[in-house]
Image 1: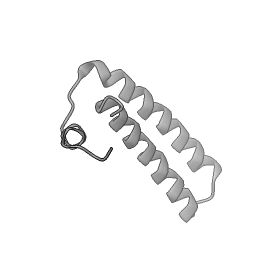
Image 2: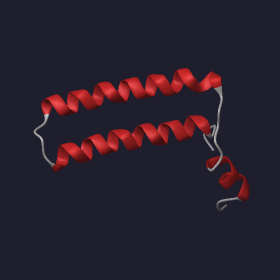
Image 3: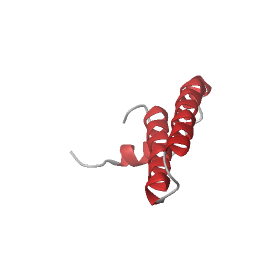
Image 4: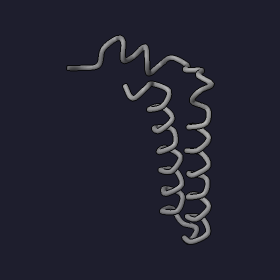
Length: 71
């Protein structure tokens, strides 16, 4: 099965659900802790930058999973 119009509607709609705020905060806080550890324990270099970028991407993808209900 391919991507449906329902999928697109879900992915490209702003999802404002106060009951999910705690989950977003928990993920952001954990990611910030990981980012701090990466910065403190790796040299400043392109790999450090890439690692932080991937942590940010992971947060955004996790937020999308929450907002879109896993769909």
